[in-house]
Image (cartoon, rainbow over all chains, first blue to last red; front, side, top):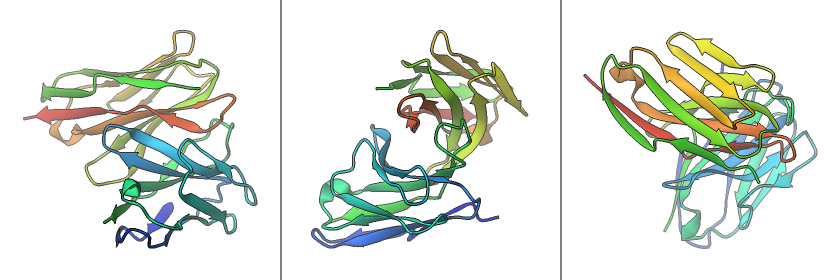
Length: 114
Length: 112
């Protein structure tokens, strides 16, 4: 019973490098989300995808891009990493936005940009 | 914009105490409110989901209530145990934005 799976779990990047964080869910959920969690700031939404084929900006989208590859997968890309992007990144999914449904989270990716 | 506040930010109690964690939100037009638990270095685990039409939900020693009119939810933990030590977060899915907005959490330590 995998739920939401994120890869990688840990990553160290040099400033200016690029990388893609992968997320997949096996619950047939329509909506998927990317959050970042920083000390003292709580979880902040980066991007979300209400349904397959759509993506929208959240609270802190600058420096990131996303792709909803299919219903299962939602990836987050850092084109040119900056130290300010050092954070823990969480992917989540739910049946659908505005449906009052439960959200499920992955285990997170700890990213350090040096 | 929905604002979610959790009080207290940190709490340390002896084992066996009954606890109340608070969550307040500014936009009462919500679809649901969800309580999560997060252990250090781990992801978020869903504890309870309260739909907008519900007043409370219970799971084992946990009880969550929702009062939309006052913009408040409480998480009640009965007979606390050291294994309850974690950060507890609430998230609100509100009308308009639809997306879950989180509070900053309450860090709980239950000592033997």
